[in-house]
Length: 60
Image (cartoon, rainbow, N blue to C red; front, side, top):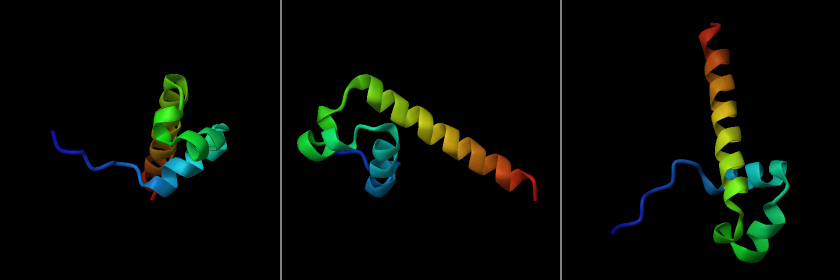
């Protein structure tokens, strides 16, 4: 099976990890080292940011 291309950029994921407090784990162990809960929180936060951005665009 081929690798899927990620939807989020590496830079964006790193920013989310820093904001959520587990970037040190990513640096030490890579993305495979984070807990499932952290991954879920990262996706949840990305969705919140996207929704906020869409709401901001709708007000024009």
